[in-house]
Image (cartoon, rainbow, N blue to C red; front, side, top):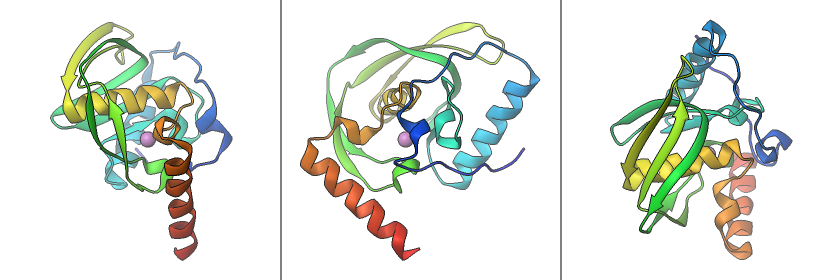
Length: 163
Ligand code: NI
């Protein structure tokens, strides 16, 4: 187990559509263990493979009581709407309000390659959408109007320079 380096905006891999996970072996389990280590170290609630530089459809999460590993995630169903603050480890945790579905049904494969479905509401549903977006090369700021997106990026760059 190891903590990996987190890729940050605007690194190319964060904008790429991930390749499907095809090998459900020990290496995948080790990779997910590293992703959990990296996520907890950064005090995040979710982490997708592109965030450690891998162009792969895979994420781990531990958010609002929902802890799971999702390979080849798909959003099977959504319902309702919520509006709330969201942030990303790849954008320096600078928050912005994003509109998302309130209820989300996630379909994905586990470490053995077995398909499962998991339904969540609220914060965990938001996490499903945020992390699945990462697998599609999309960041939460892509959901923002240009002016607000620019503000988040500006603040992120500014804070990065202070470090
Ligand atoms: Ni993120």
